Length: 484
Ligand code: NAD
Image 1 (spheres, rainbow, N blue to C red):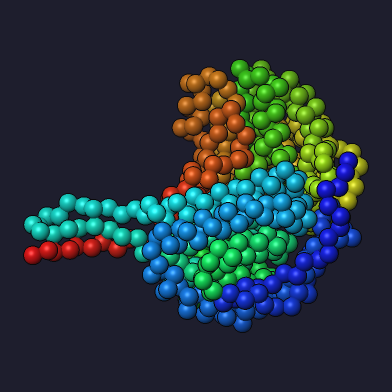
Image 2: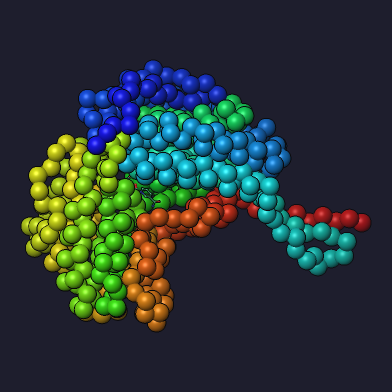
């Protein structure tokens, strides 16, 4: 194993307000894989920081709105090129603050650049309808209008891709943004913002506020001048934000947790099915909202699949994401690591059998865990772990498997492994999930495809990603133009 970088000095993190990086770094972020390495020193924002950021955004928005679509698109496209050119640097910082592997981080930075590129092109392609008028000499058409200042609140697990897929459509639609990254991962969003500034984004159009969710996050979502809030994170925090934003009749979009099932039917190849399940469960250290957390297998394949899953799980050796050969990165924090361990212990206590990953742990390197003998009402079958822990359940047949799949409060992604097209169509029709994958891992999304969940995974009003992301960040004005 070789390290690809020497230990780097801590990077100052800062708020971005009216085009200036401000604030004194006081809060340490340490590399989860190398606890002796301080990665960033971030300032702790206050309600006053948020007020300054919202004021800067309010001042800057009218001029940004009045730019043409192609002018806004050119900034996004230039930012994409800059981010692409900085991929190595940004991906290393992302690994150091979040813990995932360098391959995963490089993929995420590339995704963020592609998202900027996509919305750069969308700016040249703004939609609107021309509609038949009931009176002569009248042109009826619709136009998209920006909302004004929007708030963006993001989690730590995709610290640059999620900010990109919220900020890019917000800017494309002509809004100004105040964004708040998770406290554990501030550098990635700073890199994104720096690319946009260097690409010519006017001062104040994008502002960042760093600090505690309960302080700066709460101030941001409660601010009367913030016309909309897009949030990704946990259900508990999301519910509070929904209450605060709805109370002032502003627009809110929440993307939250998942307990994503992968149904495996008798006709599947156990080796292929195990590879799909493991990729969804242990990729990104299981720290993805779309991670596979339940495998639901029918009787003819269950035992062969479990055997294969236990074998494949051993190959996901955890390690430092910057070491070549590491297949699974570190868990993001001590708190998350302890939560993962508690879930495994509870699963064992409730009757599950740990068939992989029961060995000793070291630092924040958690093994890939497979638990069998899980019943639908066990904690491990109901609650989101957000770590590399996979529960395996038995089902009698497809309909029983689908009922188990649907028997949770979440509905983000779901998968099925089978080439029985009749069964596949029935599953697609019956499963309660915003995204359904057939013979593919439940994780992994295309940036041009609408994304979001149902039930407690999502507000399920507006979708993120692709052209449909613009809907959240704009409203429709209908124009009747008489020409007599
Ligand atoms: P979290 O809810 O703890 O934090 C998310 C963000 O909200 C952070 O920036 C945090 O500082 C902020 N926040 C906390 N309290 C706040 C408050 N009172 N007011 C305003 N903002 C506040 O989530 P996390 O631990 O960072 O991320 C993990 C969660 O995110 C998991 O549940 C996961 O499923 C979810 N997630 C969902 C998706 C999706 O698209 N559905 C994607 C990634 C992660």
